[in-house]
Amino acid sequence: MNRLRLTCVALGFLLSFTNVSAAEQESRAYFGLELGFGWADMKAQETAQALANATGNTVTYTYDAADLVGRLSFGYWLTDQFALEVGYFSSADYEATYNGTYSGTSWTAKESYSATGLDVSGVLKPSGSDFFFKAGFHDSEVDGVGSFSIAGLSVSTSATYSGSSWLAGGGYEWDLGDASAILSYTFYNDIGGLSTGDLGLLSATYKFKF
Image 1 (cartoon, rainbow, N blue to C red):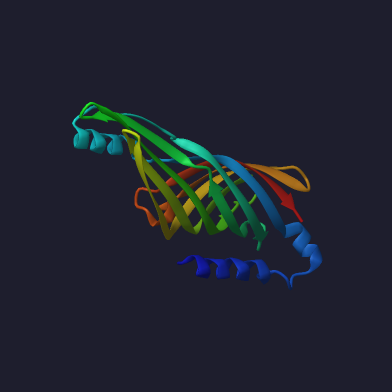
Image 2: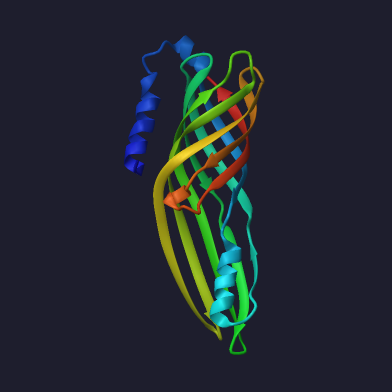
């Protein structure tokens, strides 16, 4: 599903409860502010090995195994146990740096990736439980930038990847009256349509009820 179609689905969902009475909306609609760490495998070890093979020398490297991810969400409880939720997420830059030598000359290579996306999911909370489970799909985009520098010369390149796939997760919600606090984990498969682009998000959410 492309970004336009997912946006239409999300807008349709947001408008779907406008005919519900104000009293029902107050007890069932919510808005969430979510922040956490997203773990993504940049395949830095494989890249370092490829560079080492190409230059014939040892390559050292550092990389971000996890970074900050923020998400905004809006949901509506269709029943006491089932809600529909739409969200928008954005990550900080995941960066990797590689250093080595070639013919006695030092070189440095860098790569950086960030992700954004829309998601739609169903949220299931078993009766009488504060635990919940969610599953759905996302349409996301990954922006990548790379550079290579040697002997004072440098080249750079950039690329954008987009695609859609599924998501699944769960968590625990503490009721605070007119609000609630949530600790959750969500797995996003193939971010940006990349088969190596899985993202695991461990996050905390403050949810406003209205």
